[in-house]
Amino acid sequence: MTATLDPRPVAPARARRRVHRLLIPLGLAVLLIVATLVFHAVDQPDATDRGFLSPAATGDDGGSRLAEALRAQGVTVRRETDIRQALRAAQAGPATLFVPAPDLVHPGTVAALANLPPGSRLVLVDPSRWLLAGLDVPLTPAERRWATRATSPDADGRRCPLAEADRAGTAAADRQRYATRGSATADRCYSGGLVRVRWRTELVVIGTSDPFRNDRIDEWGNRALATGLLGGDRPLVWLDLPGATPAPGGPGWSPGTDGDGRPTRPSQRPDDRADSPQHQDNPLWDAFPTWFWALLVQLALAGLLVMLWRARRLGPPVPEPLPVTVRSAETVLGRARLYRRAGARGPAAETLRAAALARLRPRLNLPADTPPAEVAALVAEYAGEDVERVGELLHGAEPTTDQELLELARDLDALTRTLVHPTEGDPR
Figure 1 (tube, rainbow, N blue to C red):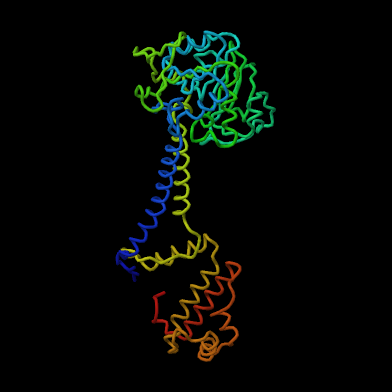
Figure 2 (figure 1 turned 135 degrees about the vertical axis):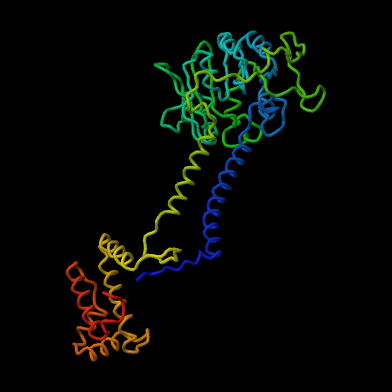
């Protein structure tokens, strides 16, 4: 005898629900990742954009408000769009050379930034590893945050020796952090986001542009920090490499001047303009941008959530129609082995009792909703058995050992044989 399972296919509605259960979480995860990347890309400025930290640019990423604040303090701000003119102006005497986009300096002229007179200060914004190596300065980029954090100068527990940072207090200066190489020493502030090195000249490195930008200068102590680093008694030479010069005579136009006060024009020679240098000996971490690693982490988390969501759920077996024909003996044997492997004596006993009741009820003309006590009383009356014993067999407790389960199976088989003719039911 064979048992044929229902060959009907899965209903279309159930198939659609399965597809929705897969597509909706994945769609939400992709939407979250894309939105995060878009908002982060919009929030973070690009040093190659026109007007980035330019003293003549009034946009959100410009530096016109910082230049006005410095001039209000009596600082001479000299904007130069040519690296050679900027170095010539800085070498006229002790000065502060501000390079807001150091990675745009041509590799052949990087070493010239070190040739400043004694008493000068060189301020670099977010310099990369290759530029620090070209300057031969004992600094190297350390960890980098996803976004700039406002923190106190002594956030890492070390006292900040820079008076400018101490006066500014909490400022948005913690994004790219820097560490010293070898036995070199440096003055660290804002958890390494601001570092000063007593080098051939005084070198100040800050790992974010936030304190200098028009849209962030009035937050926290950013204005005090920026004016403190670039102000003082020394004149300021502002190297504005990436921002193209505004149209002459237009709004915000401010030409550079040479040592005699004559205006200068940006150099048109390729080796004097800002080029995109090639990274040299970059490790794998620095070979890709931060958003790439953040995207990998989010994709891994999304994959983990999908695996947990689609993983096997613990619970009772759920019957499903299968388009196959299985022999009844194989079905019984396979199910029995599963019960035995799982130690599921309770479900096995319930299956045996349900099979016995399914054979006894039609014999006694009992409906399926007959109370257990009435079924036990009627079966005991016809079989000539004790009511309590029949009730224990049909609706008793779960067996605790394999021997009790075996005795239950034998007793149920004997009880059904008493009431049901041996030729009825399944063959034995």
